[in-house]
Amino acid sequence: YRTEEEEKEGGWAAIEETVWADDVDGRGSVSDVSILRAFERARSVVIGGPHQLKALQDAGSLVVVTSFTNLLIDPQVTCDRLGQQVTCLTAFQRRKAKISLQQELWGEASEEGGRRLMAAAEVTCWVIDAE
Image (cartoon, rainbow, N blue to C red; front, top):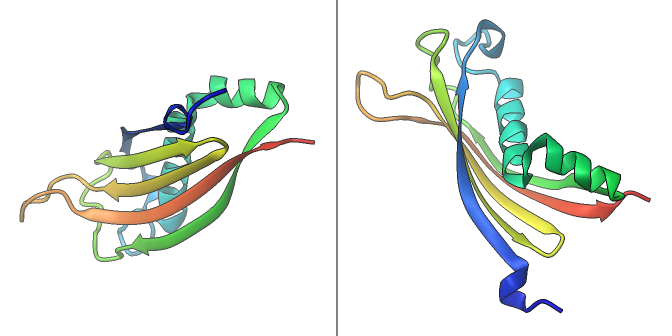
């Protein structure tokens, strides 16, 4: 038996990524698809990476995204150059089978000032029985 406090786990992770040519859309911004892929990679990291996902799968469990809300993508934040570093910040809390995440994608600091928020979303995942 575990107490409610022992069931709560959480933290945050900062994942650095490089922007390549296929990540940029016609506006000169990181594409919506590339943003969602960055969020997905960061979720996998905070869950424990490919090895943990495989271990869950081998144990008969799957991690599924059940909601993706408050998605914000700022089309005004452009990619100044290929090879630019972006950072996906992911705050998460796990309570039993539910994983709640706040995800943000930040661009490099610009000449005008600090880093700019490119995108943000709230994501809920559940660990479910695969059968």
